[in-house]
Structure formats: structure tokens, C-alpha cells
Image 1 (cartoon, rainbow, N blue to C red):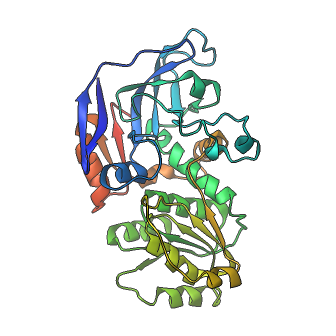
Image 2 (tube, one colour; image 1 turned 90 degrees about the vertical axis):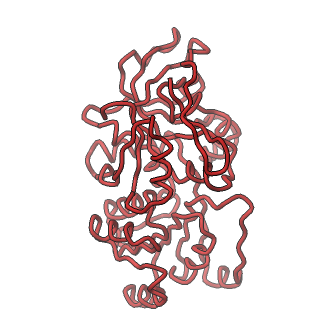
Image 3 (cartoon, helix red, strand yellow; image 1 turned 180 degrees about the horizontal axis):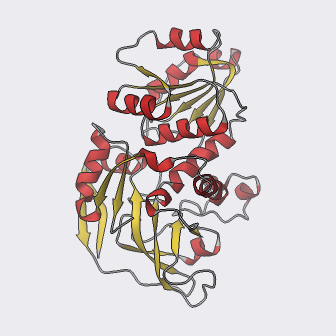
Length: 347
């Protein structure tokens, strides 16, 4: 079978490897049908990813093809979403609701990776809610967007959003526009999107009605956002990019007492310098949000299945796994792409 691996800086390969087998009687074997490419995948290929896992593909959906003897909840042919990282739900971190900080979270994973024709879901994941049967009518395309949507939902849950709040999103990539979609669904007031990619800014404006600013050609964006928000600034700024410059910019467009959500993954070793008195005196809340648990995963599935969000509208490109290298390059260059997914058949 085929699987995709990082082979060096800016290089991936589609390798022919032996199909995995169940390692325990609590495992599942799944055939991948669709898997989204994430910004963290691109960081693993082109950047310096700061988290422990270097495996590609953590947004997979597919069909169960083999079931361990001790697995009672699933059968062959079931259509499922699979979460690659699953916490223990019993440690000090989990009991405080900090599931993604659980020591077991990063250690759990699917094998060999999500960008593979087949992969094993270990008993740890299966027994702790890491596999969820898809609702009737949900496509594999939509299911491949469950994980990133869940990550976005987790950050919204941490922000104490109120209906009518004005929102700014720095970064108009797929994750950034998922935040825009959620803002619209949750009843936000004005929604601003800032980026330097004209294609993606047009996408945000035309599809979702966002107010957009190209940072390269709109140096007065701070003043304009203030003018549109009664000279306050936005209530919540979401940094959906790893750029440290975006953090500095967020301080200028967020109102006093507002929330600044660090959602994008900064490169390993990156640093930033700013006037901490400004952070203190304006009582900004600086809130990082990493990944998601099954709590937000189930919330994402509910939003999609109830058609409260049109998440599949983000998909612009589909590639067969054979063409994974081209798919990753397409997502990285972002000339005319938003969400790129990799498939192994009809979705």
C-alpha cells in the first residue's frame, strides 16, 4: 500500500510499504478515504514544527476494514472519523479539562500515519472515544474537516465569546476561514480578515462576507478597524498564522480587555518582543489553543451534521494519494487553493 512520509526539508515521498496489521485485539484497521492537509503538515515539511509528532495526516476519515476481537462498537464497513491523539481522561491535566496537555496525548497516534491507504487505530484511541461513526449523509469530504473544525471550536470555547462581538482573524488560510465560518454561525458582529494573499482574501469576502485587508497594501488597517468598531477595536482577535508579527499587530486592533487567541503554530524557537506594559495596562487576555479533544470533536460533528456550518465550501482541491507531493506543494504555495484534501477513492 501507499503512504506519505517527510524525507527532508521541503521533500516528501509516496512510498510503497507493507499494509499494517492489528497489533492487539482492541485495534481497528481503517482504509483512508479522505484526509485534509493542515498547516502543521506543511510546517513539518517546509518549516521547523515545534511539537513531537512528525507524521503527516491527522485529519483522516475512512472505512473500517478489520476489527480486533475485543472491539464491540464497530464493524467492518463502518464509516468513521479518527482522532490521532487521545488523552487518558483520568490524569491531573484531564481532570482540569486540559486534555491536550495530558502526557499520553502526544504519545498516542495512528500508524503509520493518516496519509496512508490503510492505518491501524490502536486500542488506546479506540477505547477512549478516538473513533466516531459518521452520521448518515455526512460525506468523507466533510468528515476530513472534523478535526480542524474541532480545534477551532476549542479556541472559541476558551474565549467567552458573546453574540454580537466583533472578531478579527489574522491569517486567511483554511483554519482562519473556519474561524470566520464559526463567527458567522455563532452570531458575531463585524468580522475582519487580514492577510497578504489576495486569492484567499477574495475567497473570505466573496464566500463568507468578511471585511478584508491586505496587510501589504493597507497600512492604515488599524485605523480602519477602529473606525468600524466605534474606536474600540475588536472584542476577539484570532491569530490563525504562525507569524510572530501577527501577535504584535493583534495588540493594535484588539479593544481594551479583549481576547487575543494564539491559534496558529509558531515555528520552534521563534520569539517576539513587545511592550508588556501595553499588555498589562489594557488587560488583554492572551490565550493559546492547541489541538482538540473528543469533546470538541463531537461538537464539530454536530455542527456539520445539522448543517449549521457549510464547511465543505472551503475545499478547493482534491488529489489522489499518488499525487501527494503535488498536493502538499499546492497547499503550501496557496496561489489558488484553500483547503486541499487527499483521497484514495470516491468521497
